[in-house]
Length: 290
Image (cartoon, rainbow, N blue to C red; front, top):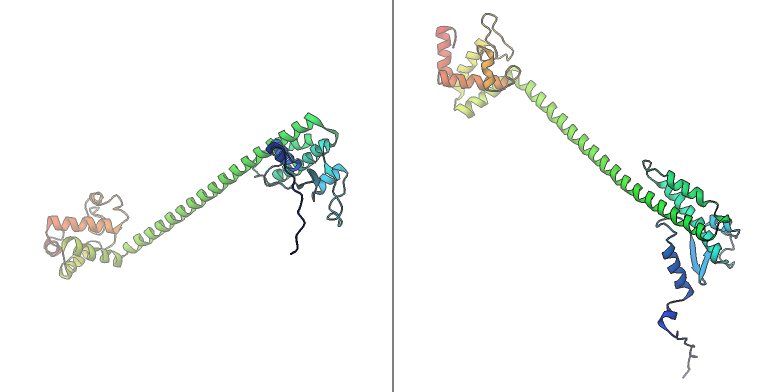
């Protein structure tokens, strides 16, 4: 039976030491310093317990390190420590902040962030607390711009949706107005007025074809079913020749322009004064008025 050689097992003396590996220390440092804005374009890689320059040319060039070459995958990358690490983070912060500026909503003021980037651009000559402070203020400003841009984007979307809804409402209102105008125009014709009178006489008063024939004879004599008819002698107005015409306002304020309103008033008048159109027509034939 073949035995595999046992691998040596190293046990950390304490849990604290086990958690204090170089890689964990670097991750904690990055989280603490918060130098990279979420969604940014800077590229740094954790390797060998320190940061190494990845595929972001701006960082390598700023530090005088070869990057982006064909042999990058086989050439060992230099580890960054101390001031070199700070400067790499400064370069990454500039790259990210520049992206934030370029993609910000046009209505958002980015001038403060642009000034922060300009202040940080001389990072190759900076070190220590000054460099750390400039990185921190640039990240804070970039975060502010991103949040303001997201807020403005939502406002723009909401405004566009509201404008679209308003336009749709106006379009529906215009369509309804056009349809109402079309219906009014159709109802104001002689044929339209007669159709309206036939319908109302039947539905409102129970008058059939015989009564409508009397009504047709009566209003043909009075106005020719012309809603704009005005008697030059006395001023009687509209299809039923109301005198004065303003009496028809009890049926609707549009009595001067709407045949249906005039017909509604005229049928009500005939019903209350004569009972039926045929009785009103007989009175008109005998007295030349009704």
